[in-house]
Figure 1 (tube, rainbow, N blue to C red):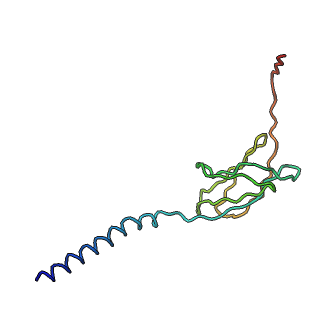
Figure 2 (figure 1 turned 120 degrees about the vertical axis):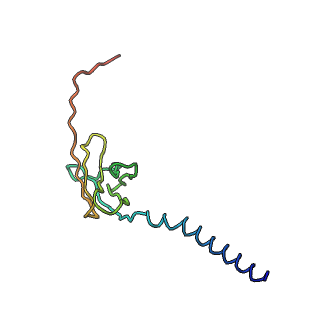
Figure 3 (figure 1 turned 90 degrees about the vertical axis):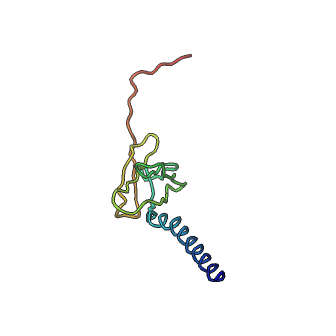
Length: 122
């Protein structure tokens, strides 16, 4: 009789271990979002690549910078509402909906800022 009780206890322990592992890892797999890679280039109005332009997923802190050729690659969540914001100092920022596309060719225009007063201290 003791031998049968040993196997029953061991089976319960093993079943409990399997249940714990399922509860730990199953939710993570269910909530993981699928993502896709969006790549592209960022240029100015003359067609020259912009080095160091910021490419950020709107509403997050996930982003990247363009390389020496103005190219970038970023992983974004699949589905509607995925918007990339591309900006650079002295240029107008642009937003691109990337729910349906995987490549972007961005052309940033210069911003015109007028100074009202200039004070020279010398």
